[in-house]
Length: 315
Image (cartoon, rainbow, N blue to C red):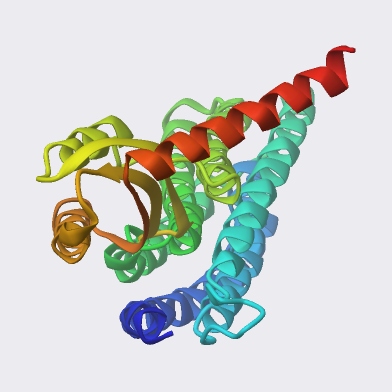
């Protein structure tokens, strides 16, 4: 439990900084949401209203991310020995799905607008677009430093970043409409905004599902870890090597290691733990040391189990 507590303290320190960024971004997002709704209604711009709609999901997204960051701070319990870290991953998955829904809605609205000619006030559209852009730049700045530490914060950051790109599209659309009078630019830019959102949403969903399915973290090459382990003294072979993420930035590993002599156990375990922490930043490490006799027993038992499995399904 002492080891888990140390990791919990490290995560707690990072979360505290991330929560401040989330709180500040939430206040700005709520303010700009109301500004863009008013601006979209006054100017008649779908791109601006689409950006405001995305802002609405951002408010929900930031609220979910903030709540998840708070819950994830809770220490481990006997029933939840790894703590509540996975709450952040669930929050990121929900945010990714929200992004998909809002992008789909924007596409639908843009398609409808292609068949409806409507007057758009380019000057008002431009003014509110500038306000949204400045607010999103500030929000993105506050979340940028923390987004690499958690997929939950990354999801919130992607929400804000896609809003920033949406504001850029609104400004470009206003300039284009002002000089050309082509109001069709508005729904076309809305389509572009929705595609950018979908791309970001897909990345968040894939990363969240990878963690929930306990896949190998993207920043880790498991074949390199295997090579590093085999290069250590006294290690003859290894099997059942597994690497996964408990949450973003908290990786775990388990492995069966065949050694030449149990008398070197302490030296081997210290060497493995030191190498994995320093070289691959893996905190939770579980190593089962085996000599040739134990290894033969494990392999024979596994073979018997597999034979039973095949007999059950194929006979």
